[in-house]
Amino acid sequence: MEIFAYNKKEKKLLSDCTLKNLPELLSSQDNLIWVDMESPTPEEEKILSEVFNFHPLAIEDAIETRNHPKIESFEDYLFFIVHGIKSETSPLNFVTKELDGFLGKNFLVTYHKEKSRSIDKVKHQVRNSSNPFKKGLDYLLHQILDQIVDSYIPVIEDFERTINNIEDRILKAEIPDEDILEEIMKVKRNIARLIRIGSKQEKLLYRLSHGDFPLIQKSNLPFYRDVYDHLLRVVVLAENYRDLVNNLFSLHFNAVTVKTNEAIKIMTVISTIMLPLSVIAGIYGMNFENMPELKTEYGYFVTLGFMFLVGVSLLTYFWRKGWILRSKK
Image (cartoon, rainbow, N blue to C red; front, top):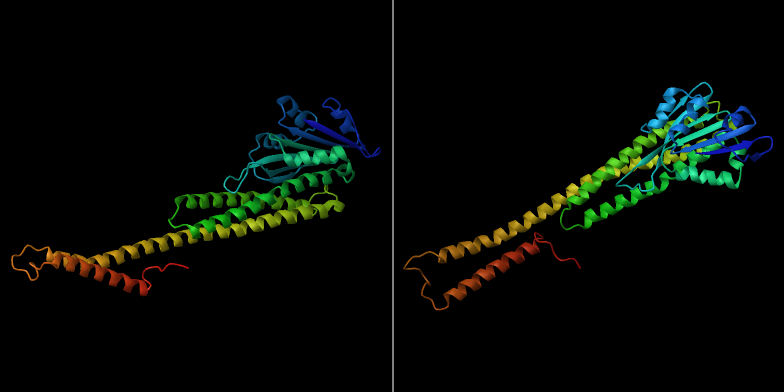
């Protein structure tokens, strides 16, 4: 757990911020407090109820960390749940991590059980410059949300590259590949999850950016609207990619159908060529005593030559008709 305190009068970060002096820091409205609880112990979690007196249901939601994005307004603070992106996420394995938080007049509490790159980046900004605090804790929250939404951008770009790659493989594959179909299914499920989480988070940011909560200063609303626009773009792109993935199913099944038809066509051509040859071989394979040309000296070779000529003639005929694919130059 890490505690940052900024004094508005002195316009500087306060040092020696500990759990013991947290109640004293909170007692002064001149102090803006950010408490980041990363993988907190049970003892540290007690500050949620004993120091901040948050609602038991909000505390329960924060500790469970299995919730959809949402925001709730209490008497003097906001409780929110957002989802960030895990570093190992990909179009084939879209995984998120939950960030819970409480925003009050002079405090911001963030709760997460996993390491957060977005939180770490904002901490780095705070340590090197207290600027995020100068515009208020709502602006500090905006910085965190901005980092979280920005982490979605590379993921949505990966989805586009993966979809294009699968499309190219479908078109180039000579034999229908079942692995491609499995990949399409995974991408479809992960895009659906991205849309589900993104759309809920979009509603949350819409409320924050349109003045639904007095704790968000009017001067900071444009910053929230900017974050909302970025997330909206992600959700719109994800919905477009969902349509592209559905098209991949059609493309895959059409490719399978075309390749199956080509195989059937080749089998039909082979069968058609073999049919007259079988007739000829069948006739001369009959065991009659008195057959024309049966005693001919070169009859065997003449028959083979004739059969070969029939096969080549039919093959040439099918090729000219386009029933057999011509080689591409």
